[in-house]
Image (tube, rainbow, N blue to C red; front, side):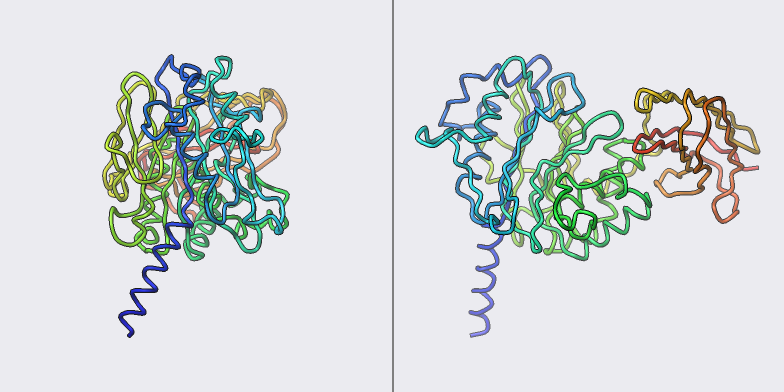
Length: 437
């Protein structure tokens, strides 16, 4: 009897996981190609062959139409050549109150011309227009509920570092993992949540990250790690996922996501090919000289499954880059920052110059307008070493000296460090070499 009961509970759990999974897809077209080149495909109801990028959007539209306990959906796009997303480039349909919870479904005309047009239809009409020049498209059908009620439709957006970062998640994160990510974010950047509010800031508990949906906590956690790595996405994702490894190996957590920095798509899968949580599948496709795509669901013969703990990077001009067992990769030493000149709000310009000798590192910069600046020193692991500055400064020339000591007064080891300069939400990271005396 106990064995039979266990089998029943296991079957019920499998059914629940299959029904409660969200669905998502993302497309990145090759250089010079946009969704406008597939305008005729917008009316193709035979989308299941996945021969063009519109098929991947249609897949999520159908999932949103019939999913159980559906909380709405979202879609956004980057125009080719743009790293930022404006308000005209994203659409969401979501519940706005507890009474609407679990009662939002797609009702558009894409597959049923008798229904009235919906926001997903509006989005698709625009995406295939030539003037949209849509190059990266991400869409997600949310299929989960939160208690207390918490809106949180994907894809999420964050404007930082002069670009828009976007993220969507298919899975679930335990309370323990969520608490870990919030605490780790606060340790890495103690005022992160003061500067980064949720995408839906008007719900009752928006001021408390512990009340955000798990996916948005995950996005903020990973973005904080990426920022700590000088906005090197590869290094930031590796750092964040390595820290999260202990939780990802538990069946109570599913961390399958698609991330974009406006240039590439990063798809990561934490679930196994079989056994517990194997219903959360992720696969990708390359159609040479046209597009690359990634989506949830059972892969077709033309798609490649993404393995457990694998990261796949899709770009416009190259073949997909695969990192099997990504969390076992060796971290890259040093953070990438393309320039030492940063414009803050188009008003304040800092041009730091770094001079080092065997004793000190001097950071010289010029402010064309008064500003409140923070300056911190980090090691190559992203750990805070020294808080150098947190002051209101007048316009003019300034310099700050780091003598190699950490916040406890101990001398730092020789090697590479990173000086972070922050003005409000605008930040820049600069690599320096410290030679221990």
